[in-house]
View 1: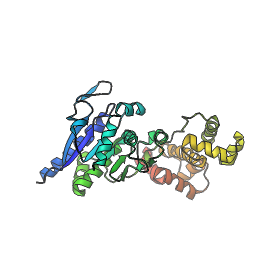
View 2: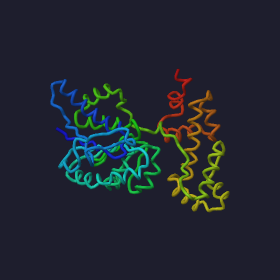
View 3: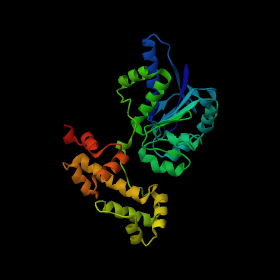
View 4: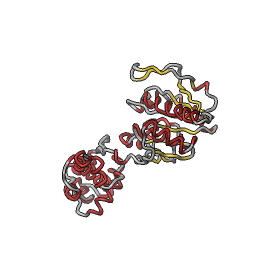
Length: 325
């Protein structure tokens, strides 16, 4: 029997608590229906016996508080909403308990932006981690010692797991169910909850937003120029000359401010523009390619697939409503 502790965090998203609770208990139901013993003993674990969520809209009553849990096998850290730094502060008393349980052999899994609380334990230092793509820059700035792989749906390293954003957390829960209860039971559970068990990347869902939450005005000017002129061929030397900076200085400052190199930023802006055209227009792939400043179809396909995980044709077929009908 595996003991699963789902943390009831202050500021937690209710569905991020309920979904793993329901999935692990449904796994037990599937097992018992097949004449097998249940696999999981699931508890909601909090800092107090009553936790108010969504400004008091919901009240959750954990079965246990952390002082009552001597040992556990798996800790689930749910997503939080609102200000992530504030949420970590409100839940900092969980941190030493999580570290202690991991040192005693427990595994730990974070869902979506629950990765911030997991990273605050230090257990992720030097390890891979995923989280919601929208929080990627904030996460990198807060935890530079963690290897953020934001395109991944699931990471698994030394008994520590993480998932991508929002409903992709369900894929991590299925992954854990498969690990403990086997592939057949995980498939049954996937069918029950209508989840695509094989989804491995959140790249197609990432919407690139220019990272301007910094104070480097030269870099902001470079970003604005790139975004206003994405249909042209833009070089790093051109940007550096425009800003009266050396190329080396611009590259260093740009990377520090945006977490992207200048070239990566240019590629992401062009690909984001291409995605919007592929989603909504009747232009063919070559027309879209030329409009965003590419001349070489192979280079365009390579960059597009690297960033989105799909070829331009696959992306268009998947997301253009007129094509899909």
